[in-house]
Length: 306
Length: 241
Image 1: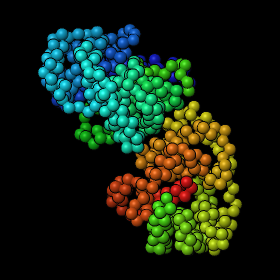
Image 2: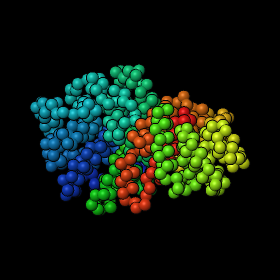
Image 3: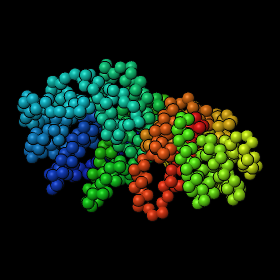
C-alpha cells in the first residue's frame, strides 16, 4: 500500500476507534466503579482521553472530539473526583487532567485556585520525579498557564538525552523515551532549540529500529507512540514510518479497538477472572487512545517519501 | 574469538566422548560439523566414520529436501585435506548442487515482510541465502542488495534485542554469506553470541528458562536438544565471521 492509500484508510480507522471509545465512555467514569483500584485506573484513562481531545482540537474543529471532551469535563467536574485529584497529585494526573481540558476550552476556576494553592505550597515542586516525568509536569504547567521552568536542563538528564545503547532498553525505558519526545516537542508541534546534532543523529538511529522492533512484536501501543516520535523528530523518510502506519491500519479489531501489549495481557490473564467487558476495556483502551493520538498528531502525508 | 571456538570444541569433544553411542544421525551430523569447525579433527573423524557407516545418504537428502544446512558437506569442507573421512563425505554429498537464485531478492522495504514475517520465515530466508551463496563460497548476485542488507540488519537487531540466540546465529551467518559483514548489526550479533558462551564451552541464551523447562518435561535432554544445536550454530556463525 502506498502513502496515498494509507491516508485514505486513516479516516475510517479513526472513526471506528472513536466509535469504540464513545461506546466505552461509561468505563471512564470513576463513579461507576466500586473498586478503588479501578477508580484510580479509569481516572488516568479519562485524563488520557482529555489529552487526546486537546491535541485533536488544537489545529481544527472536530465535533466528535469536542463532544468527547465535554463528556470528560462532566466527569472531571464531579466534586468527589476533584477531591481525589487534589489529594493525590503524586498518583493521579491532577495538573495534566485540568490543563488538557482547559486547552479544550473548559475552565474550572475553583479547581484552578486549589491547584494554585498546591503549587504555592511547594509540594509539587519538591516531589521527587524521574526527569521524563518532570518533563510531563513542566509540560502540564505550561498547558495550564502556570509559570514553568525551562526544559533544556531536564531533557539533558533524561534517558533519551544520554543517547543510550538500544540493547539493554526495557519496555518501560522505551516509554520514557517516547514520553520525553512527546513533552519536549509538544507532540511534534515545536522543534526544541536544545536538540543537538548528536540528539538528532541518535533519533535517526534509534527510533526507526525501535519502531521496527515493536511492530514485529505486535506491540501496537509502543508502535503507535514510536510513530509519533518519528514524526515529532522529523524522521518520516524511513520505511518504518509508512510501513508502520500500513501495518497499524491493518490490525484494528472488528469493534474498532486495538489490542493492548501481549506481555501485559499475560500478566492480566494470571489475575482473577473479571467481567469480560471490563477486561477488554482495561486491556485495549490505552492502545486505542495511543493509535488515535498518532492519527491526530502524526498522520502520514500523501507526499511522504517511501 | 579463537578462544571461544576452542572452548566450544572442548565441550563438543566431551560430548562426543561421553555420548557418541546414543546420538541420532542428525545429532551426529551436527556434532561432526561442530568438531570439524573447532578443529577437533580426531574426534570429528571418529564421528564421521560412525555417520558414514550409518545413514549419511538419508541424512543429506533429508537436509536438502528440508532446505536446511548440509552438515556433512560442511563438515567435509572443514576437515583438512588428506583426512580419512573428507573424501568419503564429499563423495556422499557430491550430488548436491546449491541453487543460485534467491526468491527474496525483491524490494523488501516496500513490503510489510520486514515487520510482519514470523521467525520461521526469517529462518527460511537465512537458509536460502546460505544455500544460494554456497555457504559463503560464492558471491550473491543481488538486484536489491540495499533492501536485503537493511532487512537482515533490522532482524538481527530485533533478535539480539530479544536475546534469541537460535535466531541470531542464522542471521549473523546470512549477513556474512551475503557479504554484509561490515554492518554494525553483524558485529553486534557476533558480540552477542560470544557473550552467550558458558564456562564449560557450550552456548545458550536465557538458560534460566531452559533449565526451568527441562524440570517440567521428563526425558528432556538439555545437552542434546538445546546446547548441541546452539553450540554448533554459534561456532558456525563465529567461524563464518
